[in-house]
Length: 272
Image (tube, rainbow, N blue to C red; front, top):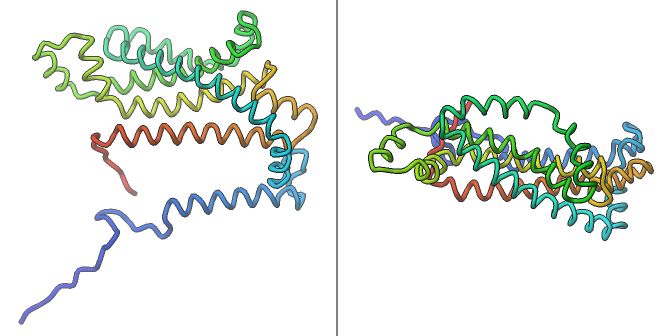
């Protein structure tokens, strides 16, 4: 007598993983739609005073009424953000690679940098304005300082996770210290470096906009502060929306770079 065992179909479901009731992308859009709906109806139903939150429709009308002004400010902020990112990423990655690859320097200097990063860096901005004025130079340097520390610490931490057998093999073939850092340590620690890059880019954007809000004559942060003092709530929220758009675009670019550069890297996912 032949017994036949029927195996339940698992089409589209990987072994060891539970099927999603709702696709993650669909769920993300649903949550985004709920947020926009709440943004529109909460002020109109007086759940939140309009002086604190303008309806979404009013925000868009106010923003597009002053579209040229906002686009000019966005371009100014983007200009500052670009140069701040170049400084923060290049210096942070280079110094993190250097400190992470040399044990004595790592044990001596990394705790110092970590302690400095814990200090509210906003206290440095009055000093920068005294040295450089309220022009774009102070915004670029302040944003770069904000992004420098997470880039440095993430790169140095990633260096410490590299398999020692890679270094042993490279040394046995006569690799110099510079070759070890550039050809072994940096590629092997790339996932941590790119994670640090995402954090550093977000922090740099925060630093630039905060600096513009504190003392500036141009930029998105300046427009937000100016409209806030005049209680133009809709214009304030349109400026905030543009900041979110700028940060989201930057994060999307870094995610795309991460997907293209980490195809070779094995990933281990933990599913609950």
